[in-house]
Image (cartoon, rainbow, N blue to C red; front, side, top):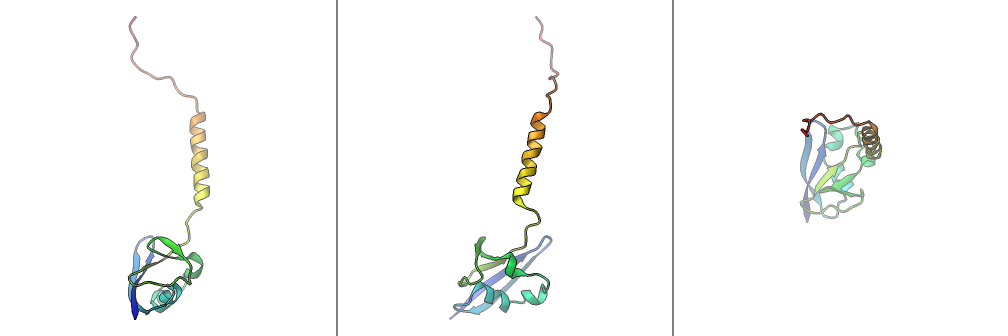
Length: 109
């Protein structure tokens, strides 16, 4: 029996999709190899960036199931930990600034 899967690769400006039929018992890596992805993206090393199914990261040896959406992940453009550090430092600088007196209406006594 065969399985129908979709290979998905989201780029910054577009999404690459291919639906294909693979033999039952094929792995995610075999499904990507059977697709046109490597021919259309020869410079992209998908083995090191990882694969997933419906947003859940999986190993290359995970068995593909019928109707799976196999996602090819891109490398991160930035380190999330470094971004959190920068935001925390920015907030700390904002809190250290002296507050200016509020300009409001004068109270009549």
